Amino acid sequence: MTHIGFDIDGVLADFATAYIGLINTKKGTTFTVEDIRRHEFWDTLPITREEAFVYVHELLTHCHDNILPFPEMQVFVPTLTKDHTLSVITSRPEIFAEKTHRFIQTHFPSCFSGIYYSSDAYTPHGGKGHYCREKSVELFVEDCSLYANAVAAEGIPVALIDRPWNRYDLLLPLVHRTSLTDLEQTITTLLKGKQH
Image 1 (cartoon, rainbow, N blue to C red):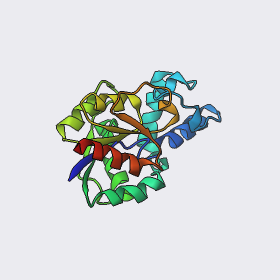
Image 2: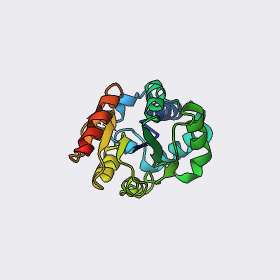
Image 3: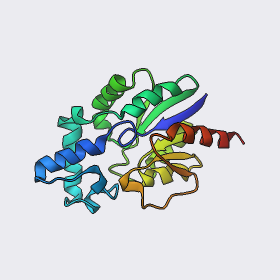
Image 4: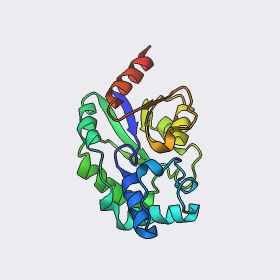
């Protein structure tokens, strides 16, 4: 069985919509997800780096129920469990483990064999790549080009979900941009490529 790893936010969970909603409430703005042009939100929104992390912490601590799963992923992920081992590798700090586990158990019951916390959001230098190598992940699904490139640097192919914040970034050859609609075909193609 092939081991496929998944990020949570931006892949399984629509973090950005909840996050933008929180910013709009706090600042009286009308931003949309399309306004996020960099994974480092503070580079494209009128917030500081410090505010960005305060809002992330507030969202994950007090407003976690506002983060909804992507319906497409709720349909697709369970179809993978018959032929693959699935795990989650997230950049969320482990202090949010209880809410993260509850989210996965509620929206993706019995799909994932483990949830691992790389904490890249606070130290973004290859943690996910290390975890993927350590856990013998053979393919990873991600939305952040920085983390995707870190995983690819470990020789692991990555399906990068197309998002406004990754469209203009340079990608390593093992990173393949895809949509949620085309994810199944991308995974099939990448896994076939590993067999040759």
